[in-house]
Image (cartoon, rainbow, N blue to C red; front, top):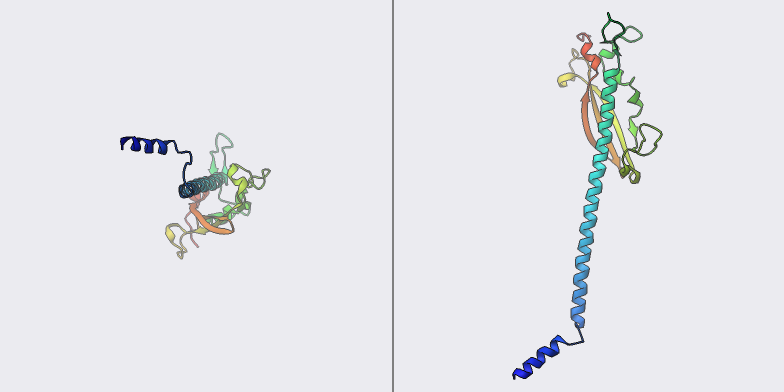
Length: 201
């Protein structure tokens, strides 16, 4: 009996027939299942990484535009020091000797160099400021950024005529894959507005 059991174990260990058909099919199915899910999770991770990188690139574009607008608003109407007796100041009077820019900040925005670049596609043209490719992620994606500006009165006093429209409400819309979404909104004001006299109609 002992010799028989020993012979059975020996035959099992050295059996050259290998796995049967059922074991082979089961192993193949398990390998396919594991490989499919591995590829799925890898592709999902790559998609999330791409979306995150693209979102960061869009945010960088918008931040760069905001900083440029802030710089232009600060410099607009600024008169540097011309002599020892004349200090630098902000001039709120235009060529017609009127103070129209003090009543509505959009009259200042319309004169800024960046006002014409209200819609741009990053990476579309390296020769222009609005189309420069600052991030490689834009080379494979069609992204359009649009800036919309409206003027508002401070403290949400929309119908109070005693307040001037000194706040610029800037909204950035992003279009991707033919879908437009509101990305972010900020409020800016012209530096010269702090030098304007009290507003009265």
